[in-house]
Length: 128
Image 1 (cartoon, rainbow, N blue to C red):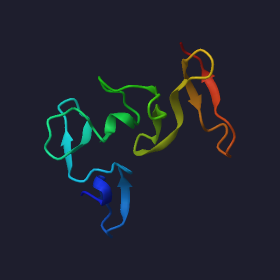
Image 2: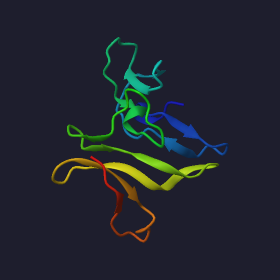
Image 3: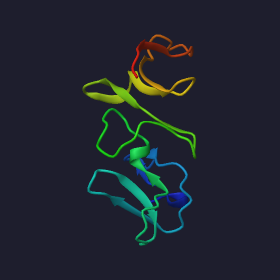
């Protein structure tokens, strides 16, 4: 379903919003699922490769070819992977693979469970 401002909106059986693509500001949204698996929102039927929103900017637990990890400097978007809570529960789990851009950029596996009370992440496995 297309919502206000050209967002993709998923509703539960009661009509409440259960997920939204947030703010895209598209007047005539065109939602496409590309052959590579990227769900995108474009303006109208234009042929450009300019996407106002794309699912590849919000990876979950799987990294597909053509997806990117790390910081998108132009928008300050931090793209990272996060584990599922359990194999039958796809909600956010305890581990993430993120780029640490402080100092020399490196990718780390973070254990988010250690500081579930609001503290900082704990680096459990370094990368490079």
